[in-house]
Length: 315
Length: 224
Image 1: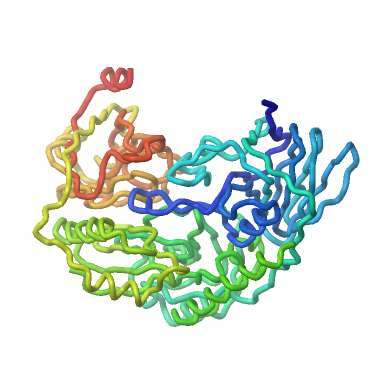
Image 2: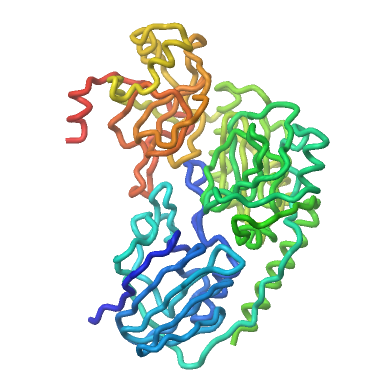
């Protein structure tokens, strides 16, 4: 049997395998993980005719440079991404949201994301990966998941276990909507903060700090003053929780977050806005808007309908 | 008893068992956690028990806050059933190599180091919860004269196996991680095994822990 694989010539900054994530493990300290931007993850799989829950390669800022060895295969990249394809020795500028056919010796050079953080690379087939608790998602903190729980490294091989090619190019005309504000439901310690603190939180501009990763997004801006206590008894966290530690700077819990925390929670980002939130680059500005639970539920139904439409329109 | 159920965002229930953190409250939390887990309620995708709270995360594409709140409120919890729990002995080496914050503790607690170790080793500890990092147990309670605050500046890297103290609790760093607890020793035991999908964590909420002191020679040979 001929082996099909990618040689990782350059690993990129934070390149990992991700899928829909793993559940039912918060009680032992293991978070969901999974693709940060779920919609772009699903589109990537759809563009290569895969089942939507198959693992893909997620990259942040700078992606990998991969050289392909093996039989003909289709690939696709999603997200706001600059990349080149070297096919038969010639370099072409690639386009996100389109499938390509590549052959032995071709290269994919994922140069950078543009106005976003994460992008996705899918192949028509399956990578040879180990599942842990029903998921391949890599959690580099606990070393759980595919690739021995680690980021990609230069020089390694990425093996492919199954190839299923197709003939006609597939394309999505999905374009990310730019949203003005990230919508938030009041947190369980909302009343710990001063009136001015709450006012600042919902009216002032915050900047995404460089100290942001798959675990959390740190923000800088006006300090959020706490009138009650800067600590609470440690308790569970969920994706999107906004904690305010003693220094008054918000931290938003993201997909690889610690499962327990002891800082007061001012709010929780609504599920419908999560994909947009994670794509905010360091240095981006962010404003929050308070919404009720019922609004958040309606917005999530709309988000799901939209995702369905985008996927059904891919040809 | 659950005192109040509110929403934590749009995809989780926040069940509050009151402000007091003790074994009694925490036992209630764990009983609810175990019953809900057994009930396999459709849509729930995670449960996080802690000292006095239980967070129930759900898939918003399947169910919602008000539907699930009703189900939880009407769930019958078997109060008489005793907690499923086990007693575990954890070896600890308090050699200077491992007791990174013993000087700080001597100053803060105004006790000599051997007295600190003795006080620590004589008690049985109850596991309130596991988490923060995978498998990390939060154990209590330390004697009143053993309670120190976290380090002013947390360590960027606490070595794997480190055993720390803070306030009424003690914990075990299941792998290298940032952290601010006062480190008094280290265990050679693997408390979280990320290769074991069935029983990855040695210690679960409700378990009882005793620490047994070992010397550096025994520590070094432990995993031979």
